[in-house]
Image (tube, rainbow, N blue to C red; front, side):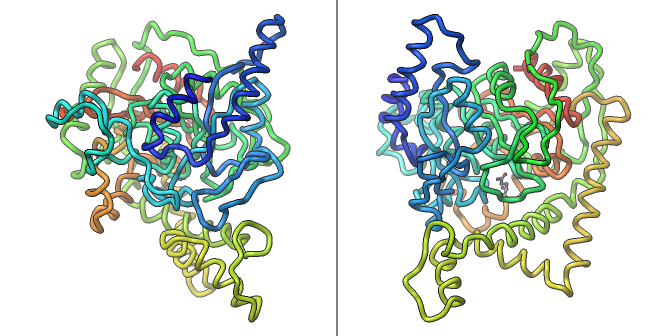
Length: 471
Ligand code: GLN
């Protein structure tokens, strides 16, 4: 715990943490040590330093969603997943940075500033660029972590904790995991409770797990998974514990390669890692087949209609009365609402609220919202059809390319590309399936690239077993 705390301080320039809960962590670590010394039974995560994305409620610890709206907000309760980590002895190091309200895929949009990718300062990357391996201040051209759980990904990648919670609505756990060279796992929708996760899109949000290896992700899943009376969408029998056996024989596996994922924007390097991975499975005897997910091209638009519609309704709770920020204007309740929300939310959040309210207008509802729900079903059915045809897992890229420099990412035209970047991840959320991003290799630039495995709903254990074999 002390080593992790000192690393957190040393790597402060990464901006991975919004709150460092040093006192809480030291106390928890001390209690854990006492349990160990007295020979008491230990929890599955006893004494293990973990971090939590700042959109999960933590009792007594500020929870901001990286937004002015919630600055200073201290929840009176723990999210179920946070409580389950603590019940198993985990040590909470702090709350991690994100895009405001988890809207984004760069971790560049929060009010506490962008998160820097630890790989920007790696020996490999610096050497390739003929730069000195150290000295965070000399280079303004640092890389983004991806997002929106970039703080959690950077925290794990920089060894400041062993596991971190992210949230995954359209790829926010898998995307930064790929860019930071770690494992990012999105469980099946309904396997892990969302109670206390401040919602983005209730029908797609899932708590995500970021770790340095697949086994660690399975251990954390074992702690988190299971029914929660406070989240009616959680299933009764999660089939715990998640112990991964070593897969010795892959010859019975059928791996699907979705042909629609071979998009022109995919970088040639990622493409070549993808095909090498497929060849590896094939050479070990697995059946590798090309499959079709025909509605893939509608997924980005469909996601955005549904996402913004749910955002518009979710964000209504932030009215200046119940939580966080309230403006000084007191001429009328309406003026107070408006000014509070103008001051509290950034452009991205306000833009989504506007778009969502547009789609939900009486005259637009059937044409946009209902139609998008139907397309969502078609997208989900594409996966069902593929799995029914005998495919065990799908293998795809996680992102279009390795992490890009911040200055490139924030260019106007690249923001459109960043929506495009979710192309491999968001359909999975619309279908509620489990998916995991696993680091595959370093690019020519010396940067990590991840590949994604997608599994059948509630076959999380099988999915992780395949990912473990591959990693
Ligand atoms: N990039 C996507 C969005 O902005 C996904 C975000 C997420 O998974 N939280 O909606």
